[in-house]
Image (cartoon, rainbow, N blue to C red; front, side):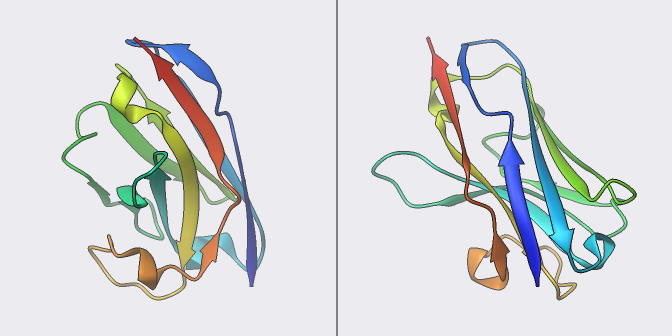
Length: 125
């Protein structure tokens, strides 16, 4: 089992940048495909981006491609999400998730066994 704790969410202005982190503890972090999902109020949780176990391949939702960058540091057991050119529609609770099976691409939230508690990002226009 792995425990995930997100941090870095806060209120920002449109056009700003923000960095989210997700620290993992428990099982070997490098053994998991990792992803970010988000859920805006009143909507379903949606895929943001995912990264393979080695960090060599990334996948992004069209809505964030070119603005968000997902990365990981396996030595630090940490997943990151760099968010640039933020828009009001990026406002949501952001969750990191871990999948112990190496499916790829991996956008289906039902594939992910472990989830963090979420961190709130609010973008004001």
